[in-house]
Every structure is written in structure tokens, then in C-alpha cells.
Amino acid sequence: MLTDRELLADRGDFAGDGGLAVRDPATGRLVAKLTTSDATGARAAVDAAQRAFPGWAGMLPQDRAAILHRWHGLIVAAGEDLARIMVAEQGKPISEARGEIDYAASFVQFYAEEALRPNIEGVTSHLPDAEMELWREPVGVAALITPWNFPCAMITRKAAAALGAGCTVVIHPSAETPLSALALSVLARRAGFPEGVVNTVIGDAATIVGEWTADRRVRALSFTGSTEVGRLLYRQSAETVKRLVLELGGHAPFIVFEHADLDRAVAEGIKAKFATSGQDCLGANRFYIHRPVYDEFCRRFAEATQRLTLGPGIEDPDIGPLIHGRQIDKQKAHVADALDKGARLLAGGTVDARGPLFFQPTVLADVPDDAAIMREETFGPVAALTPFDTEAQVYARANASEYGLIAYVHSLDPRRIYRATRALQYGMIAVNRTRVTGAPIPFGGMKQSGIGREGARQGLEAFTEIKYVCRDWA
Ligand code: NAD
Image (cartoon, rainbow, N blue to C red; front, top):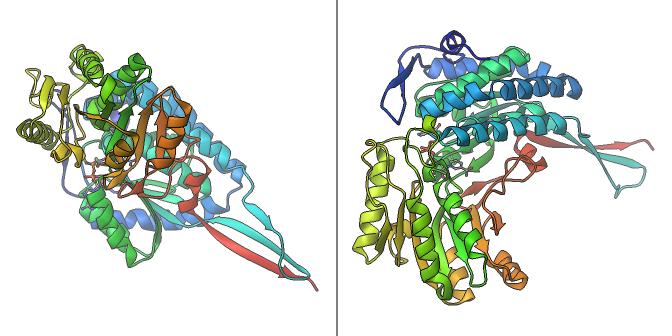
């Protein structure tokens, strides 16, 4: 188990000056004050990762896998501690935090196993007397930059793939959730990763990450966060030609056709909208409901929303606080704008008496397509509902977004589901259910939702190079 002393002693691997206050979003209480790193610390982390790389890449895959398996076991064993740390700094309901730890651990186990798969592939020769092979080799040092909404899973999804492939890593977690990252790094050390293989650096994002994007020794960069920061890192990485994975924003449509199982559509819609208090890149932002079932869906969805409980994550409500005041401002702005443009308020609509970071679960009906909430990521507990009449119309409206991460479809008609799957320009299509992600599937989006995939075999691609070998014996 993790002790307070261990956590607080582990203030990032390259501590320098400055300070970072971590606060509980439910109460505003100071949870911890951490020393932070600067550009020198960021460089020192890359020095250490670069030094450790040949040894780690050259280790037998089964030895690397054994360390990953130990890390997995330690994460599972410390699951309750990790969940409580997450609740204290991120605010999500404790049962969601426990679920995230299981999800986070599953990537470590998955990539421990992937590390054992063959990394040499034969090619049918097009030249006489020549043998051809493709060798997959780790790229080198990988920089991993993660957001606050899934403070553990976003780290393990990247780190386990990179480490399993044979890369060493430098990790920069969000300033809102550094304790989860430090706890994972304590467990990594206990698992036996050699010195310099896993390096966590806390500090000013632009300074730390700017140092890494400029450093030629950092060969891959994997980022999860907003599209805005993703574009910036894409530009910054061009100069040093890094391999990139960008998991960016989303704006999921949730489409309910007539003849769907309406009870199920409502229950799954509640999950798709309100999990992680709506602060989820997979969160449903726009609900398109077939006209014949529109009124009924609106009524049942609003009733189900009104039954949701709100409170500090440790009390295990349905919805916890939002992470900071900017998130509250966004909810207020989206609600006011939609009402201004003619939407009807069916539930919630404002900040709750629980405290300044609690926003009531909110349902808006008849939201017009030109409302901000139909285009911009809301990232909070506000659902926008609108009717549609034809299939062609709903696919066009659902695709009229700069994002393309996930789309949800509810119908019991297989032909309609087939047509929807073909028509929707999204990296993931979830039919008649909400939770579809897991370590064995390639997670990622189209258009401005990003580049590359995480999880599955595809998650190794950014961290490996292909070396083509041709041997002529004649
Ligand atoms: P963010 O883009 O503000 O920050 C993400 C990370 O980038 C943080 O660690 C932050 O410290 C760092 N960062 C911020 N400014 C930076 C800069 N100038 N230079 C370098 N690094 C910088 O995002 P956020 O607010 O923490 O998270 C919410 C966003 O993340 C949403 O847009 C959401 O959709 C997206 N997200 C996407 C996925 C996905 O897998 N597609 C998953 C979770 C969150």
C-alpha cells in the first residue's frame, strides 16, 4: 500500500523550484503542496531516459514483461489508495475512480503480454535469392502528456505501450492531478523498472513540454488533451520530426431511432452524458432523437436526470464537482446561449448549492443547430436534445462537427445500424451501449479529434520503428 510519507517524498523525479498546490475540487481544501521542476529538470529527465534506453530496449522481452506484470499487480493491490487519491484531487465519484483503476491496470497487463509477441515479420521476396524481414524496434525516449479527467488511465494507456515496446518514458501529468501520477511512479519504482526508465516531471506545462518537443532525443510524443494544445504540440514537434499520437477533443452525437429500446437508450444516454460529471472526451454532447419518440425520450431522460445525486466524490454520488471554475463558466455560457436561441430547460440549469464547482445535471430540449453547445465541447453535465426526421438529415447533422471521436447509435433495426455505421465519420461507433473501450481496442478519433490510436496492437505503432532487412546469400 502507499504511505503518505512515500507519496509526499516522491515529488516528481526532477524537483527544482516553484510550488504547486493541489486542491480538492469538492471543498477547495489543500490536499498537498508539491515542489515543481523547471526546464533543467525536464532536460535531466530526458538525460536519464536516454541513458536508460539501451539497457531497457536490449532487455529480453520476457524480463520487461515480468516488470510490467509486477507493476500491474501493485496497481491492483493499491487500487483503493489510488482511487482515494484520485477522488481527493480530481473529484470523481469513488466508484468511478475504482473503475478507472481497473481500466488503468488493464493496459499494463495487456502490454506486458504484447511485449512477448514476435517483433520480426517475414516478407515474401520480390528479388531472387533474397530474404526479407521487417524488424520492429523501439523508437527511443517517448514523452507522454496527460490530462486531469482520467489521471491514471491516460498515463498507463500510453506508458504501458511505450514501455512494452522497449521505449523509456518522460511523463508530464496535468497540474490538477499530479498525485495520481506520482503514486503510479512510486509503484513503478517498486515494480523494479531500472533507474531512468520511467520519469515523472511536475511543473509548468509549457516549459516542461516545450523543452521536450525541442529535444531531438525525444523520438515520440503522445498527448491527450484539448485540440487547441494538440495543434500547438503538433507544430512544436515538426522541427524535430517526432512520431505523434494526439488524442484530442470530442463532440459525440447520440442518435436514437424510433423502434430503439427506449428504456435502454435513456439509461445508456445518462451514462454517456453524466459519467465523470460530463468531463469525458467520449461524453455525448448532442442528442438527436427521432421525431416519433422525441417527446417520450425527452420526458424520460429529464426524469432520469432529476434522480441523479450530486456531491463530493467520496460520498459516491452520481455526479461530483467539476475540476475548476473555467468548466463552470463553460456550462453557464452553453446553457445561457441555448436558452437565448430558443431551447427549453427540462432539468437543472445552474450552479448547485453544494458549492461553487457543483453544476446541476442539466437537460435542454429543442436546441437549435446554431447553439454553441452543438459545436463546442461542453465537457460538463449539460445535455442538448433535438429532434430529427430523416436518416439522411441526422447523419449530415451528426457529421457537421470538426470532431470525430465517437458516435452512439440506438436502434434495433440491423439495416439502419449498418447504414449509420457506414455514414458516421467517427473513429468509434457504439451501438446500443455506451461503455465500449478497453485495452484490446484501438481508441482514437478522426478529423480534429486526433492522430493515431491507443490501446490494442495499434497502440504500439507510435513507439516502434520498422527496420526493413534484405539479405542476399547468392
Ligand atoms: P489541456 O489540453 O488543457 O491539457 C492537457 C495536458 O496538456 C495537461 O497536462 C496540460 O498540463 C498540458 N498542457 C496545457 N497547456 C500546454 C502547453 N501550452 N504546452 C504543453 N502542454 C500543455 O486539456 P485538459 O483541459 O487537461 O483536458 C480536457 C481536454 O482533453 C478535452 O478537450 C478532452 O476532450 C481532451 N481529452 C481527450 C481524450 C482522448 O482520448 N481523446 C481523453 C481525455 C481528455
